Image (cartoon, rainbow, N blue to C red; front, side):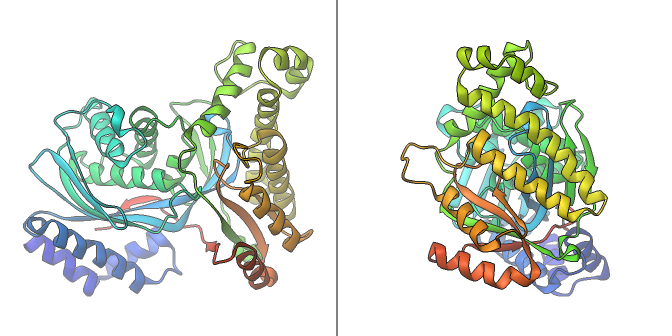
Length: 431
């Protein structure tokens, strides 16, 4: 009881150290009372759902959601991206147990339990949360850690199926819990991201790249070069959109990412086919000139769409690097032009704004069109994240924010706009 009560009291009457931790993780402008209240709610939830946790050690954990800023579907081809952690997050209160089971209660989803006596991938768990719980334990055990069970109460403000990486945020949160309870704090954010990607690939069954997990884990805005897959180059980029006169807005298109794994998988698969033509596993290093010189053979042996998607990669890989440089040089206008070029390329070449199973259902395309109608020749707008459904991203001038939000909400029949800020730290043990 002593450990639990100590944490509880710290949330009610925080020390200067805890207040400093809030500023370090969330930035100087975050509402400290809200942060403390959120953590108290998960601590109370842990005690309610798992009463014996009050007699064990307890920790509080956080992992950010992420926003992709540049490089749409470039990471899985060992390309470059620009991404950032955001002020939407997954948080948990967790306590180790001696049951060799992970027992989790997630707000809005209920209770789950996974027995760690079997750490092999389960076919019937594909694309489900138990796959992530089992997978993280399995992969860490293979890495040499003596993992065990724990109880956790989790809640998340990251919109599910929105392109803000609720799954990667959840994976990073699990990594933070396991790291604190069973890995002696030895895992750095990059390692947690890599393990999270492997869990999603092998156990969850989604062939994702590493960008989502890296952005959720590392924190701040990061330019990432994945050319060396095992040792990606991660560089923090100083971004202050507010100072530059813009708000970063994510708009829900009222479509879900659920059941779209085959659509996502088609992109790396088709890009891999083009890469194989050149004797490579990925497109990294292939030039636009090579694509043009071999255009007929590439289209005959593969498909027009595969060729177009390869062209998108080559150009967007360069754009992602350019965007980071433009921000570092303070060239906001140039950055916005490049963002718009990337968005246009995703529509025309990558073609990830609709599955076309039902050609009349084009919510992402319609939302992009509406946003562009409102912004005119100001700001920029693009498909966000994996695409096909979920959200779009807009950079909105301060003086247009109210108008933009009002008109976007009206056009979608409800509140769909979320104004984001970038937070300094991705995944962390709070207490």
